[in-house]
Length: 56
Length: 487
Image (tube, rainbow over all chains, first blue to last red; front, side, top):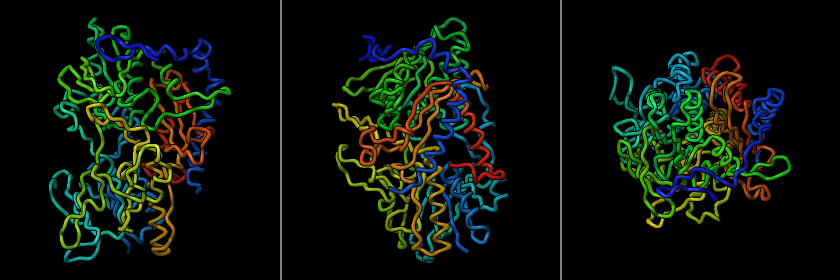
């Protein structure tokens, strides 16, 4: 579901999409949360590199 | 002495060349042929395109690196392959035309025992009238020079906004069959960040124009994530981001023509539209590098090695079949060219067996089908895998088993980052594992492993992108310990 202008199919808003709360937006820059996430993403990338060469 | 020739010095070709030299020592000859004198970390061109980095920060000259590594470097464009040799010489060879200053146009023939085609894409701006920076009306971030020009035009647009003029900025794909929607998505949010930083966001309409049928497709049929006990989709996540930042979108679009301030496009319902713009960065569709192939008698055999798109046919299943019947096993594993056991194709140069995202046609017959991305991390892994196969066959004979790097098994990270510094940036970070959904292996999680497929927004994604920038450039420069940095 989306809203479009009348003149062209330009979607200006997605009404069904969730809006982040103030806490979510704050947490996106909270170092105490971001540092562990950084470590986890690096580990995730390494896991993909290692397992990517596995054979089925 | 065995001669290995690598065509192309992008992520796949350069990675392959460095690993070949490491694995083979200096007893064998490794030659890289590239029309470019510099290596370019293309993902960071996005930052050059908004003025956050300089061109010099994303490129470096290849010749000193290859000299140090004892790899022969030929600055030239490959134009023809003779896989079975020529009338006078049974050894395989490649015809190249020099692009080096002072030697432009000079032709050479390079003999090889093993050949890696890693030529990357031809940027097909000509596919859409008026597209691109070379005589067209839009900018691009596909090369560092393009990105510099994009940055200048963006600055001019921001200056007009500051003077009170409203402006429309369009970022996206310039044809229905483009790939790399992730790059267009990333550039969109970098532009949005620049507009906010300049204090002119309220005066600008920013539109993401894409061939994707829905947001979050990214040319890989979207992704499903597991977060906080729920399944979420890349579509929902992306739509939320577009709402939050006030970015508008045009979906399922094939751009047919671009005039100085107007984009003409067709949508999936077959209707045609126009969109006015003041600034537009639209990516071109990719094609093969345009290599020809000839048999010993001089007859052309290009169709034996290359698909009509110009990409090289490898060990994939190219049988035409409906979308519903496509399986992960169709995708190549070893990148050997069938019938030509000494030729490999890696990175963008290989012909994908089919799209990953569902291809669609408008009622007018126009194909709107995002092409599969095969850049960055998967390209590097393919390059290394092919280098390992060739090294094993040189050391242990032609029956040595090939190493594998199927895109249906390997993952990729896509980080759309904006801003600078360690504390001011932000990024939408996604990982998908594997790139090509494998519904046989992961039937209950949309073809991908939930443990590796994630999406999130935050400062940490920006750190990941910065880390990848510095690590990959360090690795590409073959500085001490480069081989321990994974592809």
